[in-house]
Image 1 (tube, protein in one colour):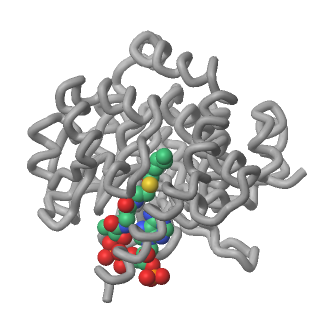
Image 2 (spheres, rainbow, N blue to C red):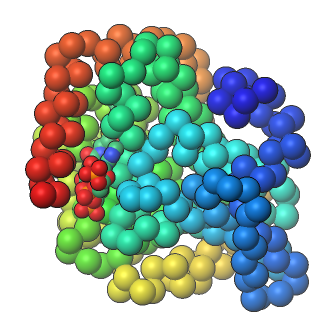
Image 3 (spheres, protein in one colour):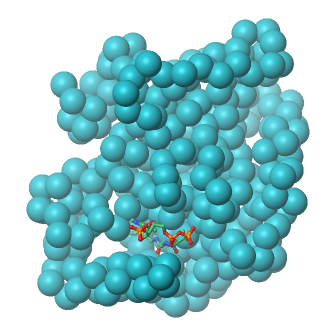
Length: 303
Ligand SMILES: CCC/C=C/C(=O)SCCNC(=O)CCNC(=O)[C@H](O)C(C)(C)COP(=O)([O-])OP(=O)([O-])OC[C@H]1O[C@@H](n2cnc3c(N)ncnc32)[C@H](O)[C@@H]1OP(=O)([O-])[O-]
Protein backbone atom coordinates (compact mmCIF):
# COMPACT_ATOMS: atom_id res chain seq x y z
CA UNK A 1 0.00 0.00 0.00
CA UNK A 2 1.40 3.42 -0.92
CA UNK A 3 1.75 6.09 1.76
CA UNK A 4 -0.92 8.13 0.05
CA UNK A 5 -3.27 5.17 -0.05
CA UNK A 6 -2.50 4.64 3.62
CA UNK A 7 -3.63 8.16 4.40
CA UNK A 8 -7.04 7.29 3.03
CA UNK A 9 -7.40 4.74 5.77
CA UNK A 10 -6.45 5.89 9.26
CA UNK A 11 -6.39 2.36 10.67
CA UNK A 12 -4.18 1.17 7.90
CA UNK A 13 -1.85 4.07 8.63
CA UNK A 14 -1.51 2.98 12.23
CA UNK A 15 -0.68 -0.53 11.13
CA UNK A 16 1.89 0.65 8.68
CA UNK A 17 4.20 2.60 10.94
CA UNK A 18 6.49 -0.21 11.81
CA UNK A 19 7.14 -0.78 8.10
CA UNK A 20 7.50 2.89 7.33
CA UNK A 21 10.12 3.93 9.81
CA UNK A 22 12.34 5.19 7.00
CA UNK A 23 9.72 7.64 5.79
CA UNK A 24 10.98 10.39 8.07
CA UNK A 25 14.24 10.50 9.93
CA UNK A 26 13.57 9.82 13.58
CA UNK A 27 16.51 10.16 15.90
CA UNK A 28 16.02 8.58 19.30
CA UNK A 29 18.14 9.65 22.23
CA UNK A 30 18.16 7.49 25.33
CA UNK A 31 19.12 8.96 28.66
CA UNK A 32 21.43 11.52 27.16
CA UNK A 33 20.86 15.23 26.76
CA UNK A 34 23.11 15.24 23.72
CA UNK A 35 21.21 14.82 20.50
CA UNK A 36 22.79 12.58 17.95
CA UNK A 37 22.08 13.04 14.28
CA UNK A 38 21.56 10.16 11.95
CA UNK A 39 21.82 10.22 8.19
CA UNK A 40 19.13 8.48 6.20
CA UNK A 41 20.34 5.94 3.77
CA UNK A 42 17.53 6.55 1.34
CA UNK A 43 18.28 8.65 -1.74
CA UNK A 44 15.35 10.99 -1.14
CA UNK A 45 15.87 13.61 1.53
CA UNK A 46 13.20 13.46 4.22
CA UNK A 47 10.96 16.51 4.45
CA UNK A 48 10.61 16.00 8.17
CA UNK A 49 13.36 15.37 10.67
CA UNK A 50 12.41 14.25 14.16
CA UNK A 51 14.76 14.32 17.13
CA UNK A 52 13.33 12.53 20.13
CA UNK A 53 15.01 12.89 23.50
CA UNK A 54 13.77 10.01 25.58
CA UNK A 55 15.17 11.41 28.81
CA UNK A 56 12.91 14.47 28.56
CA UNK A 57 10.05 12.88 26.60
CA UNK A 58 10.22 15.75 24.09
CA UNK A 59 10.45 15.43 20.32
CA UNK A 60 11.48 18.25 18.02
CA UNK A 61 10.04 18.05 14.53
CA UNK A 62 11.96 20.06 11.94
CA UNK A 63 10.17 20.86 8.69
CA UNK A 64 12.90 20.79 6.05
CA UNK A 65 11.27 20.95 2.66
CA UNK A 66 12.98 23.64 0.54
CA UNK A 67 12.41 26.31 -0.37
CA UNK A 68 9.47 27.25 1.86
CA UNK A 69 8.05 24.11 3.56
CA UNK A 70 4.94 24.28 1.41
CA UNK A 71 2.44 21.58 2.31
CA UNK A 72 2.38 19.25 -0.68
CA UNK A 73 0.67 15.87 -0.59
CA UNK A 74 4.03 14.16 -0.08
CA UNK A 75 4.97 16.58 2.69
CA UNK A 76 1.63 16.09 4.45
CA UNK A 77 1.90 12.32 4.19
CA UNK A 78 5.33 12.32 5.79
CA UNK A 79 4.26 14.88 8.38
CA UNK A 80 1.20 12.84 9.45
CA UNK A 81 3.19 9.64 9.72
CA UNK A 82 5.77 11.36 11.91
CA UNK A 83 3.12 12.78 14.23
CA UNK A 84 1.27 9.47 14.44
CA UNK A 85 4.46 7.60 15.32
CA UNK A 86 5.18 10.03 18.16
CA UNK A 87 1.57 9.89 19.32
CA UNK A 88 1.73 6.11 19.59
CA UNK A 89 4.97 6.27 21.59
CA UNK A 90 3.75 6.75 25.14
CA UNK A 91 7.19 7.96 26.24
CA UNK A 92 6.77 11.01 23.98
CA UNK A 93 4.85 13.64 25.96
CA UNK A 94 5.77 16.87 24.21
CA UNK A 95 6.29 17.96 20.61
CA UNK A 96 8.01 21.10 19.34
CA UNK A 97 7.41 21.96 15.70
CA UNK A 98 9.88 24.21 13.93
CA UNK A 99 11.45 24.89 10.55
CA UNK A 100 14.91 24.24 9.19
CA UNK A 101 14.32 26.65 6.31
CA UNK A 102 15.67 30.17 6.67
CA UNK A 103 13.03 32.91 7.13
CA UNK A 104 10.03 30.62 6.67
CA UNK A 105 8.13 28.44 9.13
CA UNK A 106 5.76 27.21 6.40
CA UNK A 107 4.31 28.93 3.31
CA UNK A 108 1.07 27.00 3.82
CA UNK A 109 -0.61 24.68 1.36
CA UNK A 110 1.38 24.02 -1.77
CA UNK A 111 -0.47 26.12 -4.33
CA UNK A 112 0.68 23.80 -7.11
CA UNK A 113 -1.40 21.03 -5.47
CA UNK A 114 -4.51 23.13 -6.07
CA UNK A 115 -3.67 24.43 -9.54
CA UNK A 116 -4.43 22.45 -12.70
CA UNK A 117 -5.02 19.21 -10.83
CA UNK A 118 -7.78 16.62 -11.41
CA UNK A 119 -10.74 16.51 -9.01
CA UNK A 120 -9.52 13.11 -7.74
CA UNK A 121 -6.09 14.48 -6.94
CA UNK A 122 -7.57 17.59 -5.28
CA UNK A 123 -9.73 15.32 -3.12
CA UNK A 124 -6.75 13.22 -2.11
CA UNK A 125 -4.81 16.35 -1.24
CA UNK A 126 -7.64 17.82 0.83
CA UNK A 127 -8.06 14.59 2.80
CA UNK A 128 -4.36 14.83 3.70
CA UNK A 129 -4.81 18.46 4.84
CA UNK A 130 -7.73 17.39 7.04
CA UNK A 131 -5.69 14.50 8.41
CA UNK A 132 -2.83 16.79 9.39
CA UNK A 133 -5.18 19.13 11.26
CA UNK A 134 -7.02 16.29 13.00
CA UNK A 135 -3.77 14.72 14.16
CA UNK A 136 -2.30 17.96 15.47
CA UNK A 137 -5.39 19.59 16.94
CA UNK A 138 -6.46 16.32 18.59
CA UNK A 139 -3.01 15.33 19.83
CA UNK A 140 -2.53 14.17 23.40
CA UNK A 141 1.01 15.56 23.34
CA UNK A 142 1.71 19.07 24.55
CA UNK A 143 2.62 20.90 21.35
CA UNK A 144 4.66 24.08 21.06
CA UNK A 145 5.13 25.87 17.73
CA UNK A 146 8.57 27.44 17.46
CA UNK A 147 7.68 29.85 14.67
CA UNK A 148 11.06 30.92 13.33
CA UNK A 149 9.86 32.56 10.12
CA UNK A 150 6.85 33.62 8.08
CA UNK A 151 3.78 31.52 8.52
CA UNK A 152 0.92 32.35 6.15
CA UNK A 153 -2.30 30.35 5.70
CA UNK A 154 -1.70 26.62 6.26
CA UNK A 155 1.53 27.53 8.07
CA UNK A 156 -0.50 29.64 10.48
CA UNK A 157 -2.94 26.73 10.83
CA UNK A 158 -0.12 24.42 11.95
CA UNK A 159 0.99 27.03 14.50
CA UNK A 160 -2.58 27.49 15.76
CA UNK A 161 -2.98 23.77 16.43
CA UNK A 162 -0.18 24.04 18.99
CA UNK A 163 -0.89 24.63 22.68
CA UNK A 164 1.63 27.50 22.79
CA UNK A 165 3.26 29.63 20.09
CA UNK A 166 6.67 31.29 20.30
CA UNK A 167 7.60 33.52 17.36
CA UNK A 168 10.86 35.11 16.25
CA UNK A 169 10.72 38.85 16.90
CA UNK A 170 11.59 39.87 13.36
CA UNK A 171 9.33 42.51 11.75
CA UNK A 172 9.94 40.99 8.32
CA UNK A 173 8.01 37.86 9.31
CA UNK A 174 4.25 37.56 9.16
CA UNK A 175 1.57 35.15 10.26
CA UNK A 176 -2.14 34.86 9.53
CA UNK A 177 -4.81 33.30 7.35
CA UNK A 178 -4.44 35.18 4.05
CA UNK A 179 -6.53 32.84 1.88
CA UNK A 180 -8.85 35.56 0.55
CA UNK A 181 -5.83 37.34 -0.95
CA UNK A 182 -5.47 34.31 -3.22
CA UNK A 183 -9.18 34.42 -4.06
CA UNK A 184 -9.82 31.28 -2.03
CA UNK A 185 -11.66 30.71 1.22
CA UNK A 186 -10.40 29.16 4.44
CA UNK A 187 -12.69 26.24 5.35
CA UNK A 188 -14.81 26.29 8.50
CA UNK A 189 -12.27 24.31 10.52
CA UNK A 190 -9.45 26.80 9.73
CA UNK A 191 -11.91 29.52 10.80
CA UNK A 192 -12.91 27.64 13.96
CA UNK A 193 -9.28 27.16 14.93
CA UNK A 194 -8.66 30.87 14.53
CA UNK A 195 -11.78 31.82 16.48
CA UNK A 196 -10.66 29.48 19.27
CA UNK A 197 -7.27 31.20 19.27
CA UNK A 198 -8.00 34.92 18.92
CA UNK A 199 -11.77 35.27 19.25
CA UNK A 200 -14.64 35.99 16.89
CA UNK A 201 -14.19 39.68 16.09
CA UNK A 202 -10.49 39.45 15.24
CA UNK A 203 -11.08 36.35 13.12
CA UNK A 204 -14.02 37.86 11.25
CA UNK A 205 -11.98 40.84 10.15
CA UNK A 206 -8.67 39.01 9.58
CA UNK A 207 -10.28 36.24 7.53
CA UNK A 208 -12.23 38.58 5.28
CA UNK A 209 -9.29 40.73 4.30
CA UNK A 210 -6.69 37.97 4.53
CA UNK A 211 -4.66 39.83 7.13
CA UNK A 212 -1.07 38.87 7.74
CA UNK A 213 0.22 40.16 11.09
CA UNK A 214 3.78 41.10 11.96
CA UNK A 215 5.05 39.49 15.19
CA UNK A 216 4.13 42.45 17.46
CA UNK A 217 0.58 42.60 16.08
CA UNK A 218 0.28 38.82 16.32
CA UNK A 219 1.30 39.01 19.99
CA UNK A 220 -1.17 41.83 20.64
CA UNK A 221 -4.15 39.86 19.34
CA UNK A 222 -3.00 36.58 20.94
CA UNK A 223 -2.21 34.81 17.70
CA UNK A 224 1.19 34.04 19.22
CA UNK A 225 1.96 33.84 22.93
CA UNK A 226 5.55 35.06 23.12
CA UNK A 227 8.16 36.84 21.00
CA UNK A 228 11.85 36.16 21.44
CA UNK A 229 15.01 36.97 19.46
CA UNK A 230 15.31 34.69 16.47
CA UNK A 231 18.23 32.69 17.85
CA UNK A 232 16.29 31.90 21.04
CA UNK A 233 13.10 30.51 19.54
CA UNK A 234 13.99 26.85 19.93
CA UNK A 235 15.70 27.14 23.32
CA UNK A 236 12.70 29.08 24.68
CA UNK A 237 10.37 26.41 23.31
CA UNK A 238 12.40 23.72 25.07
CA UNK A 239 12.33 25.62 28.39
CA UNK A 240 8.61 26.33 28.07
CA UNK A 241 7.90 22.68 27.36
CA UNK A 242 9.35 21.78 30.76
CA UNK A 243 6.58 23.85 32.40
CA UNK A 244 3.86 22.18 30.32
CA UNK A 245 5.20 18.72 31.14
CA UNK A 246 5.25 19.52 34.86
CA UNK A 247 1.45 19.19 34.75
CA UNK A 248 0.17 15.60 35.11
CA UNK A 249 -0.54 14.33 31.58
CA UNK A 250 -4.03 12.98 32.26
CA UNK A 251 -5.27 16.30 33.70
CA UNK A 252 -3.77 18.35 30.89
CA UNK A 253 -5.00 15.97 28.19
CA UNK A 254 -8.57 15.80 29.51
CA UNK A 255 -8.68 19.58 29.69
CA UNK A 256 -7.35 19.91 26.14
CA UNK A 257 -9.93 17.41 24.89
CA UNK A 258 -12.72 19.26 26.69
CA UNK A 259 -11.69 22.49 24.96
CA UNK A 260 -11.12 21.09 21.46
CA UNK A 261 -13.45 18.10 20.98
CA UNK A 262 -16.51 20.05 19.77
CA UNK A 263 -14.39 21.70 17.04
CA UNK A 264 -12.82 18.39 16.01
CA UNK A 265 -16.19 16.60 15.98
CA UNK A 266 -17.54 19.15 13.50
CA UNK A 267 -15.00 18.07 10.92
CA UNK A 268 -14.98 14.34 11.68
CA UNK A 269 -18.74 14.22 11.17
CA UNK A 270 -18.54 16.00 7.81
CA UNK A 271 -15.23 15.05 6.23
CA UNK A 272 -16.63 13.75 2.94
CA UNK A 273 -18.89 16.76 2.47
CA UNK A 274 -15.97 19.06 3.23
CA UNK A 275 -13.84 17.27 0.60
CA UNK A 276 -16.62 17.49 -2.01
CA UNK A 277 -17.06 21.15 -1.24
CA UNK A 278 -13.32 21.87 -1.56
CA UNK A 279 -13.02 19.97 -4.84
CA UNK A 280 -15.98 21.67 -6.50
CA UNK A 281 -14.73 25.08 -5.31
CA UNK A 282 -11.06 24.76 -6.18
CA UNK A 283 -11.63 23.30 -9.66
CA UNK A 284 -13.89 26.18 -10.76
CA UNK A 285 -12.43 28.15 -13.69
CA UNK A 286 -12.71 31.45 -11.82
CA UNK A 287 -10.80 30.07 -8.80
CA UNK A 288 -8.14 28.53 -11.02
CA UNK A 289 -7.69 31.94 -12.66
CA UNK A 290 -7.24 33.58 -9.24
CA UNK A 291 -4.60 31.02 -8.30
CA UNK A 292 -2.78 31.57 -11.60
CA UNK A 293 -2.70 35.31 -10.95
CA UNK A 294 -1.41 34.79 -7.42
CA UNK A 295 1.34 32.45 -8.63
CA UNK A 296 2.31 35.05 -11.22
CA UNK A 297 2.41 37.72 -8.49
CA UNK A 298 4.68 35.52 -6.34
CA UNK A 299 7.09 35.10 -9.24
CA UNK A 300 7.11 38.84 -10.06
CA UNK A 301 7.65 39.76 -6.42
CA UNK A 302 10.66 37.47 -6.39
CA UNK A 303 12.11 39.00 -9.55
C1 LIG B 1 -8.99 26.64 0.54
C2 LIG B 1 -7.60 26.29 0.90
C3 LIG B 1 -6.99 26.95 2.06
C4 LIG B 1 -5.63 27.37 1.70
C5 LIG B 1 -4.64 27.41 2.54
C6 LIG B 1 -3.27 27.79 2.12
O1 LIG B 1 -2.36 27.53 2.84
S1 LIG B 1 -3.03 28.56 0.59
C7 LIG B 1 -1.31 28.98 0.51
C8 LIG B 1 -1.12 30.43 0.90
N1 LIG B 1 0.30 30.72 1.00
C9 LIG B 1 0.79 31.91 0.65
O2 LIG B 1 0.09 32.80 0.24
C10 LIG B 1 2.27 32.08 0.83
C11 LIG B 1 2.91 32.58 -0.41
N2 LIG B 1 4.35 32.69 -0.24
C12 LIG B 1 4.95 33.75 0.33
O3 LIG B 1 4.33 34.71 0.75
C13 LIG B 1 6.44 33.73 0.42
O4 LIG B 1 6.92 32.67 -0.39
C14 LIG B 1 7.01 33.52 1.85
C15 LIG B 1 6.76 34.77 2.68
C16 LIG B 1 6.40 32.30 2.53
C17 LIG B 1 8.54 33.27 1.76
O5 LIG B 1 9.13 34.31 1.02
P1 LIG B 1 10.56 34.11 0.38
O6 LIG B 1 10.96 35.42 -0.18
O7 LIG B 1 11.46 33.45 1.39
O8 LIG B 1 10.32 33.01 -0.77
P2 LIG B 1 9.73 33.28 -2.25
O9 LIG B 1 8.47 34.06 -2.20
O10 LIG B 1 10.82 33.75 -3.13
O11 LIG B 1 9.30 31.79 -2.65
C18 LIG B 1 10.27 30.80 -3.01
C19 LIG B 1 9.62 29.85 -4.01
O12 LIG B 1 8.56 29.15 -3.35
C20 LIG B 1 7.35 29.32 -4.08
N3 LIG B 1 6.23 29.34 -3.15
C21 LIG B 1 6.05 30.17 -2.11
N4 LIG B 1 4.93 29.85 -1.43
C22 LIG B 1 4.40 28.77 -2.06
C23 LIG B 1 3.25 27.98 -1.83
N5 LIG B 1 2.41 28.21 -0.80
N6 LIG B 1 3.01 26.97 -2.66
C24 LIG B 1 3.83 26.70 -3.68
N7 LIG B 1 4.94 27.43 -3.94
C25 LIG B 1 5.21 28.45 -3.14
C26 LIG B 1 7.53 30.64 -4.83
O13 LIG B 1 6.67 30.73 -5.93
C27 LIG B 1 8.99 30.54 -5.20
O14 LIG B 1 9.09 29.65 -6.31
P3 LIG B 1 10.20 29.86 -7.49
O15 LIG B 1 9.92 31.22 -8.07
O16 LIG B 1 11.52 29.80 -6.78
O17 LIG B 1 9.94 28.72 -8.42
